[in-house]
Length: 270
Image 1 (cartoon, rainbow, N blue to C red):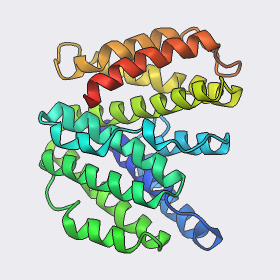
Image 2 (image 1 turned 180 degrees about the horizontal axis):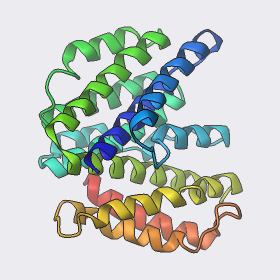
Image 3 (image 1 turned 90 degrees about the vertical axis):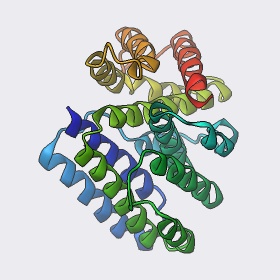
């Protein structure tokens, strides 16, 4: 269980960074980097949920606008004091980072990287996301291939250290936070698009992820940290039981998902 969750985090954040690469020259390197990460995951574990990058890429493909105001404000990062809050919001900022990278927004990418560093430092994961690494990222913002390698390696090392430390609960919270933020962004864009069917389909396609995360959360039923997200995940599992991804979801179903996700997400980000 703990290894699965940590590998989820590795893949989630590594593929998030791969989203930063664009252009014909970097296509082959980007694909190779992503495939290397995926191959490593496949050798050991089955990856059960889409990464935040995969969700934001679907949004871009569907023609969704980039709306930075719906992400977690950077100023919030200093108020997360507990390990639970740091882990959940590392997931939140990871999804926001994916969103920024997918839309090639360099300034916002740096902001989210720096916020992530604050939280990684707060989780006492040593030596893998330091000031030197952030400086190298900033220097290579226009060098997409180098950016991929620098940040992917750093996040890989981060979650390798989490795995070594046996922080399975923290890993789950990161994954849950990232998924919640991805759903939140998608719902907000769906509503602002007047319920564009393409946006509704992206939400519908999250059924398997919702069920998997609810199952994971049930293993920590007595844990007060997991309790912060378990009710939402249980609700999502129930509502998705009535969803056929091949058909899509209704406006009413999306509104139910959106209101519940927004409520929990707002409690997480504070």
